[in-house]
Image 1: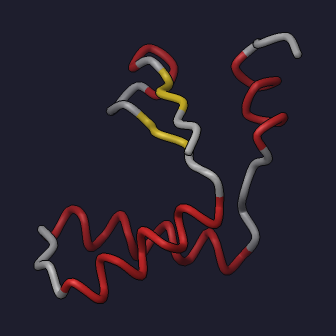
Image 2: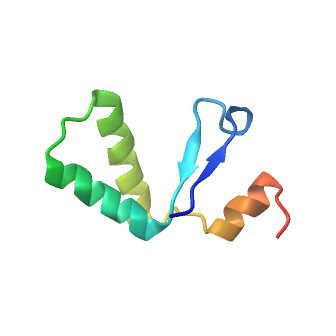
Length: 72
């Protein structure tokens, strides 16, 4: 699995980790299956991420690179 960490100066609030959609879906399923209790902040973040995912508010790997100023 490839993981990219974007510096805080770009994100402003916290580091942001980008993973492939299939890995993200597996991660969500693993969290639900394990029954691990999430913090209120994690629950809000997960709810927002699911909402954006359903609405199609996603960026491709290439688009993220372009917005960050990386050349292909």
